[in-house]
Length: 364
Ligand SMILES: [Zn+2]
Image 1: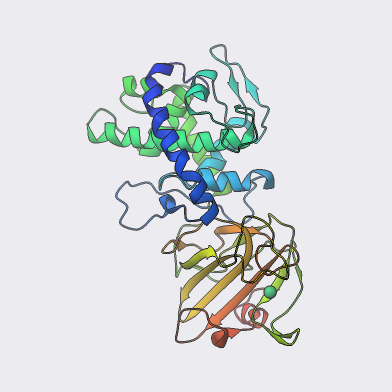
Image 2 (image 1 turned 45 degrees about the horizontal axis):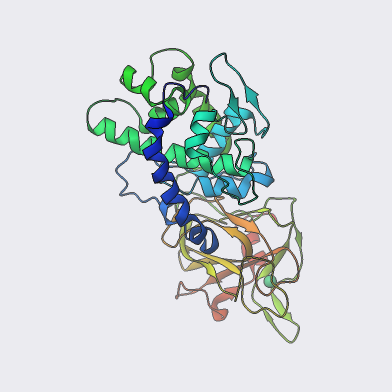
């Protein structure tokens, strides 16, 4: 953002209340992972649906959880849109400072002081409310972008703006709502004209293929080279281990192993807000995906999850991060594959994930 300068703080005041109302809902969303706002369906009529992150998207690990949160606030703005915009604004530099001669822009999402006054909060609760606090700034960016999309939608419906909703919202992020409204759309020339295209160019580096279920094959649930195989499928400790463990550092992204629909996303242990232990029962943060053809995958012990039951996933979409919640003594992904007539995962229909992945051509 360079200016926001054409928007007065007063004009923003009413909108900030909307932002705050969203914020109040956040704690429950974050602890349950049920951030339903990002569920997008084919019935969406907005013409714009946000993108999930692609495998290997260059989001710094320290910011991944906040990019996922900010990209989970409205259907039009996904994590990939958030990430591509940050890439353009600051190249992920939380201390970025730009003074184009008008008003300085600060931090990872390049807020002006006036816009920060309306949208900035201590969202991460660390005692600092600052555009230079990357967690605060990323969530503020998500809230502002969703508000700008809603604003653009209203004005397009009213015949006062023309153009793609996302382009309009991005142009307004850069130039302020007044600058876009007085032009009747994205300005015909200049930096505000170029800004949406520059983000779209970067989107290709961050966005998952959105072809949807049925479009592609299988892949590893964690980045190649980022894991070691630990406990395998089979008898263990006098019982039976129904999955394959991928040991990996906490925070490693976890991917949907194939296209499908989320059928479970919840905490299956007494608590999931911190690592569990071998005396803690349950699978911790758990996601299950129905891939059709009687195949279901299940992902356990996640640290962060963002998906919601009913959500359709493309292969390789990020569904969370490796953690150690539930019955776990260290950071790892417990990955199950189920095949059978009943799509719900049960012990009876679990199969060896490594054998299965190899049978569908995945190198493990
Ligand atoms: Zn396991």
